[in-house]
Each structure stands twice: as structure tokens, then as C-alpha cells.
Length: 115
Length: 115
Image (cartoon, rainbow over all chains, first blue to last red):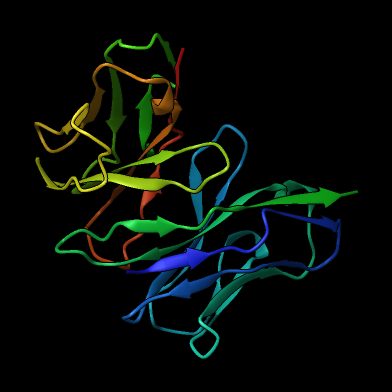
């Protein structure tokens, strides 16, 4: 079975500081990995995804993530946090069961940005 | 173009009542997913449609939950004899195709509260 672990439920950074949100996966086959962001009272929006091409993936709003097979990790980073980045972030793995490529999500991390 | 829409945005009902939650996917998307998100958790898979058929309903918690997609577009999630434990955010997502690397686009969700 495939799973995702997001350690910690809350990260707080100062505006302009580095953002690092951790995600580790467990998968018996090469995984497809996703980061989604959820703003208050909104649906999930895709930030970026890894689909076995380049290991460093660039997404929207200045975010990027690096797939590291040796560490089974797919951590999300952003060099300089903005106030608008405050949201909940979910890491997810996609796996094929029959014809169903459902997503399995981590518990999510709430990012707070201090002025 | 229009994204995934869900109605109602909020639903308050009494224990034992029947509810229907509607999802209108992005036009042309063949795959449709329902997820449930409890407070403080990531979304959890409920059911997947490919076209009109429910290809995988393994995530439905019990037989009080049922979903349809009669014309391969709009889907309705139906919950009978609602219980307080059914209170959650219900999310719908669609993708153009059902492949593992395909992006799933999420709607804003329906927040269900069972009193």
C-alpha cells in the first residue's frame, strides 16, 4: 500500500524566510507525487506534481519540490515566504488500483506567515 | 473555463435525514472522484467514476452512501439516514483521463453538518 507522511501539523515562518514543508512517501512502485494547497473556504489547488521526469519540479507561486528516491522524500520549498502563502498544504501520492488512479493524502500542514 | 462546481456549499441536516450533494465536473473530463475530508485530516477517497460507471467504490464507508453519474457528467453523492459522524467536507474532483499522473481538479467542496 502507498502512503504519505507529513510530520508536524503546523509550521510558522517570518515573511521573507525560507519555507520548507516535509513529505515522505511509502510506495512499492515508482510513485507519482503531488502538492496541493488549500486556502480557507476553498478547494484544493495543485501546486506541482512529480511524474518521473525531472526530479526538481517547479510549481506555481514560486514553490518547488525535489524528488529524492534514496530518502523517499518530496519536500516542498519556497525561498521567500509571502503573507499570501498562509494556507494548508497537502502532499499526495497517486497509485493505480485497477483503472483507478486515486490520490492518497497526508494529514496536511498549516503554514502561518508572520509579518 | 469553468472549474469543478459543487452544490450546496453548506448543508445542515438532522440525524436520520437523507441528503444529496452535487458535483459538476469540468466539461469533457471523463474521470470523477469523491473524497471526504474530516477536520484536521487530509481528504480520503470515497468513489471513482469512469464515464457513467462507478469503477471503484471501495472507499464508501457503508451502504448508507451511494453515488451516481447517469450521463457521464454531473454526479450526485447520496447519504441515507445521516449520522453525526458523517459531518465533514465532501470534495469532488475531475480529471481529463484517469491515469496516475493526471491532475485532479478539485471543487470548493460541500460542508455537511449533521446535528
